[in-house]
Amino acid sequence: MPAQQTESAHSQAHALDLRSDSDIVALLAAGQAEAAGCVGEAGAAIAAAADLMAQTVRQGGRLIYAAAGSSGLMALADALELPGTYGIDRSQIEVVLAGGMAALSDMRGGPEDDGGAAKAAIEALVPSQRDCLIAVTASGQTPFPLAAAEAARGHGARTIGIANNAGARLFGMVDVAVHLRTPAEVIAGSTRMGAGTAQKIALNTMSTLMAIRLGHVHDGYMINVVADNDKLRERARGMVCAIAGVDAAVAGEALEQSGGSVKLAVLIAVSGLAPNEARRALEAHDGHLRPALRSLKPSAA
Image (tube, rainbow, N blue to C red):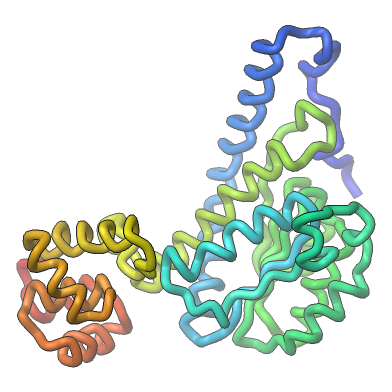
């Protein structure tokens, strides 16, 4: 296996502990920024991964995130926000972490080597061809996510692998390989920093592109948001105002009629349709607002 970039010494880290606080902060920040910049190089793979994710959700399958350590935290952060931000059904999201959820309060290193536990966790989910396993590991050879990917693929599930080292073993085990070519960490091997930053950006980008392709975004608005607090209810009202071109009172009434659905509220506000009629118009276009708007009022979209 090629030398691991994630374990390499940083060229500017010599005598790091002797430098001033401001110099250290600047170097650490620069390392994170450089790592973030590497995500764009993986654009084609990220787009392919987002397509697999969209197919999965569209077909009623599950997105199964599998990871260990810092990579697990990045995966968990992406997974947990999908239901609220984009209205993805919570039953379609699974997270398999090395050490289980107990790792969130006491993260130990040992469980990441337990491939057997990963296999058992995946087997318990009974994956199928409709599902998609997303394995995340900085090194690309951590036993836990690799075993999870292998087990899921054995059941015919789609697989995506995200790693930061070239030639990662994971890449030969998945349908879509996302290589995030991050530079050496300022603190050698501390992949919670640059590698983790790049993983978070890649995961967020994949899931956001997925949501766009599923019709949950319109002109940069999260129109499938679950508005379950005051901030989000105000955001939903603002979206209806902006997209439908109506005032806050009309938007609020439309949201009341739609049960809080921004998509339906926009159609109601624009056309005066009853909620059930608006729902049929949206369903006729697979939940995509823009074509539904065009069908009702061509100048509105």
